[in-house]
Amino acid sequence: MALPDDLRELYQQVILDHSRSPRNQGQLSADSCVHIHSDNPSCGDEIDLYICFNDDGSICDIKFEGQGCAISQASTSMMTEKVKGISREELTQLIQDLQQTVLGQGEIRNPEALGELQLFESVQKFPQRIKCALLGWRGLESALSKNSLSRS
Amino acid sequence: MIDLSHLRADFPILHQQVNGQPLVYFDNAASSQKPRAVIDSLVHYYEHDNANVHRGLHTLSNRATDAFESAREKLARFIGAATPEEVIFTRGTTESINLVANIWASEFLKPGDIILYTGMEHHSNLVPWQLAAKRSGASVQHIPVLEDGTLDLENINALLTEQVKLFTCVHVSNSLGTINPVKELCAKARALGITTLIDGAQAVGHMPVNVQDIGCDFYVFSGHKMCAPTGIGGLYGRAEVLAKMPPWHGGGEMIDLVTLETSTYKAAPARFEAGTPDIAGVIGLGAAIDYLETIGIDRIHEHGAALTSYAMQRLTELPGIRILGPATGDRGSLTAFHLASAHPHDLVEFANTHGLALRGGHHCTQPLMKRFQIPGSSRASFYFYNTTAEIDRMMEILHRAVTFFS
Ligand SMILES: Cc1ncc(COP(=O)(O)O)c(C=O)c1O
Image 1 (tube, rainbow over the protein chains, first blue to last red):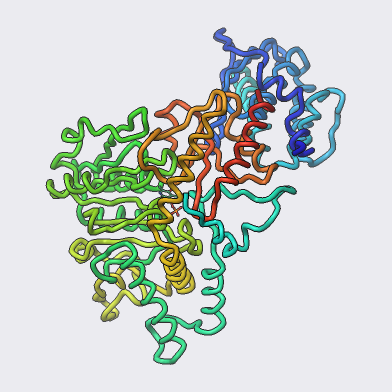
Image 2: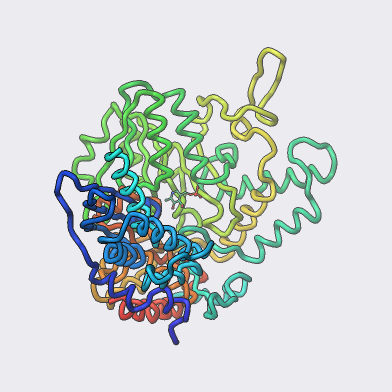
């Protein structure tokens, strides 16, 4: 019984590796840091994101805690490795490109910036997993708007 | 173990490949498959007898009415109701509970009353009561669940008091497989004048059920979990209790006399069945009962218990497994488990690509998952057409999954 190809693509080594040992685990406690809780009540996935922003709206530090399936935890772990230090504009573009990768819609403007995140293209074949792949990213979007609001 | 594998030939859907592998359908607790006899009964009804019931004086209407009412008689016999009039057709368990939580509750629940349920109820036996409590000013309380998946009955006398107006309990838990001592609990409740409702969604069609022996006031179930079509199910109500309840939906069939000012209503069951019912569904449910009775409900129960105990024994081979529910004794034909190495969502995905249908998640019992401090679980649930060979196949797939995700 060989492993089906779709399954191999969904659970690539990189993704399994991140889900087994997620990066940037923990909390940030500075007053200025933004905390966002996101969940998928239907499957019980949960992510708590802690993000410190620089004055220019870029991310200076990010950590997360969570529980859930390999896809939700790996995608959040990989996200935390990508988003530190890039400009606010690059961040917005990255989020959009990642969402379009997962949903299989629209044009990817900056594939190089996505790098390994392009692997999440495989989720297109598993529509019920889209919300898993996007859970952490939805949290990041909320954190960005919360941060903008608190500064305006 | 008794061999019922010849019955697989009666289920057209079982003979297919899913994702290039032979289908192993272990999601029967969510919905069972349908035998040819049930599918044929629907076709036969629409091709020969289709007409509205209780209305026409013509031949087709009479045939439809006879088939419809004879299904009610079968169902009453099947669950041990005293008369067919105690059986009301609904869309299923959820609708039956909502009927009682609206109609019975509107008449009998007062501020300060208590609705007592258990910590292992399906959401459909929690939410309607929470809504009823809000409307009436009553409150909800629950019987806790012990680590072994049985009810904590040590303090039952402190919980089941005269302040409780309604007690409800799942007969067989869809997450734990626990078979609750509903007869003993109903006897206790009855002695205090408490009305009782038992959720039999996982029991009817799987084990012998006799509502008079249980001694409950209401008993609810879904046809689709017992070989009947989706969209049909039942509410058993003890005649005396139904007689005190106001109508539910208003409309055709439930009335005696209608004037432009006011109306009078029929007695049960018509009182609670306004409008054109799911006639084909009822006929399909009747055909399902005929089919189950030719196999014998005792044999179905025995086979389910044997499959479950075999599955539970084999599941212990998996490292880091936690099996929910009672480890021994009589259980419903399902087993839910949690693996340290693989989240239920990933496990079920892995299984599906190998043709194995499991359920993963909270199984509509979020409070129970919280109680056991797990995000969810994976569940294999069986029916009489499943085999030990399929369980062996499941184990082969689960072993691979554990290796893959560890
Ligand atoms: C114990 C239990 N109660 C209630 C239900 C709800 O049944 P239905 O969705 O058919 O109304 C189910 C099935 O999912 C169940 O297993």
